Length: 460
Ligand code: SF4
Image (cartoon, rainbow, N blue to C red; front, side, top):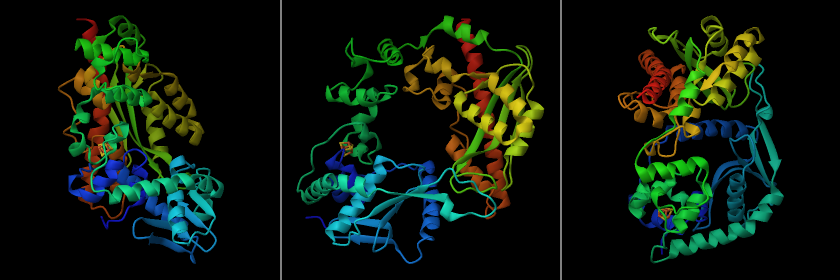
């Protein structure tokens, strides 16, 4: 019988697959865990928030680990009256109830259960005045009833986990979408990584149904299966091996572009603990913009950019930059318009004197992604995604994000936060500054290159 303890994460994994827990306890060396800088950032932001919440309970037991020789869990805040779990989200999710219920179940088994449970989470209505007010930064909600309701099911999970931990043989595979985030996929079910069924856009439960029916490839999906219009095009592209190109619709869309064309992209950091006066938790602090400008079909492409490099609110200077440099005429091409629209609306609200220009830009937004989300152009190489990172290498093979030091939005804002940190050396700051310019510049150049590639495809 194994003597290894079962953690909260492992208990939760038993909902989808018991084999994962067995492998974790008996063959941890088979685990392959990819690095996810965004997740690490969220975790470290979460720790900072937890520290702030814990400071409000100086006499409570904090971060205490409990174990009953089979299960192990760490409680955030425990007093004689209540158990408080800290979450860095802005609302309560089912998963948070499960987390605190697992702790409650363990305390119950140890006869240390206070019987009252609360979740403390982020109050996103809070606005920083001058100094941080921890009491106002958090919201707390009594979830005792929800925990009591969940406890019988959690007790069953504990039982399943204990039996699996004591088992002599590995339980059978329980294949599903959860496998894609399982660290044992490479040793347990490497075939799954090739199954194109996981590429079904917004596949959700449909993927589970198809897996259950033993269908692993898009091309094998039987005719008359209920699919969305986009999913049907995906199946067609897989079967024929050809890209789907609706030239008529692409030409009609491109005809709505007006010169001068402004290819625009923002980078922003959603910072949990408000850093500047007037900021709220997770408010997007827009710190960078890149704009490629095409004044006429024959004109040379121009580039302008803004990147803040100090630990202060970058948004006034950024709004000023847009106000001065973006003209009153022409389409503003973006990729995934809701993001840029959101940032522009925030700037308009925060700085009314720039509102007219921000609204003028919003009115002229032209979302390049819709060519792909509407399936006017669809390649099986997109893998069901329409992100620019997937589309660019197919449309413009000579361009790629691969060789850049920063290659996605999450890395961009994490690097930005490192750049404005006092502790970062000036050499490193300069390096990050250059990498950020390269990355954001690539985003807008990529949009220009994709539009040009679409024009070429349609005029073949
Ligand atoms: S890959 Fe899937 S079946 Fe295998 S252990 Fe992980 S979750 Fe279970």
